[in-house]
Image (cartoon, rainbow, N blue to C red; front, side, top):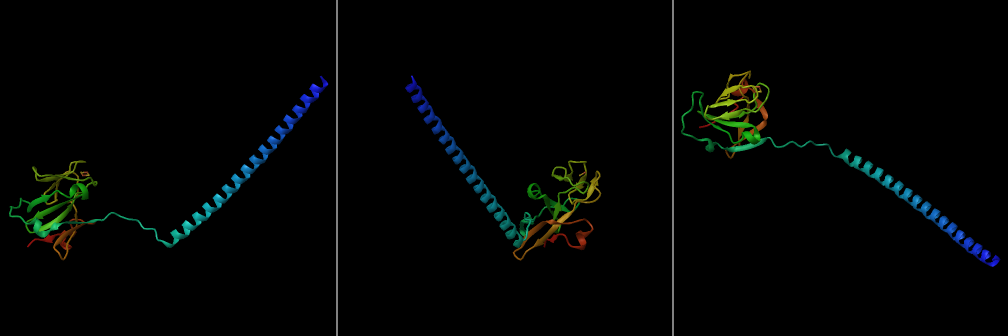
Length: 197
Ligand code: FES
């Protein structure tokens, strides 16, 4: 019995010492793991900080630029607007609707000129629509109406539709700039149209 007890005690002693060792190993590897993790995290944050600083430095040497979409469009050559049709009572021969959807303007061909009419209502800025059957522009917001030449005749709009800058280059292309807007007072003064020979 004594032998057995001793033997069993001996076994227990062995088991408990190995579990102690395991615990110690566990403790060491966990400590190792934590300390390695901390050092990786530390270096990581150092590199991140340095990277951010470097990015700021690079940014400093390059000016911040805001890119705008292009505002000029070639609408065709002067010959594309030739016609033998007769003008209406406002001197307009036809209204070209092609640029309204994407660029918000109409091209008007009158008796001897081509000009670009801005489709922005002069009341509160809604986009006006062209009604060929009625020969008028109408605003969907508060009902302003304009003749084919852009002059207002009904609703709250206080003045005619504005025009956009139009130029002709050396090759005869007509170019409209949607970023340069003129109100009625400037139409004749600044020649906001292209003469058709
Ligand atoms: S915005 Fe066109 S009538 Fe008011």
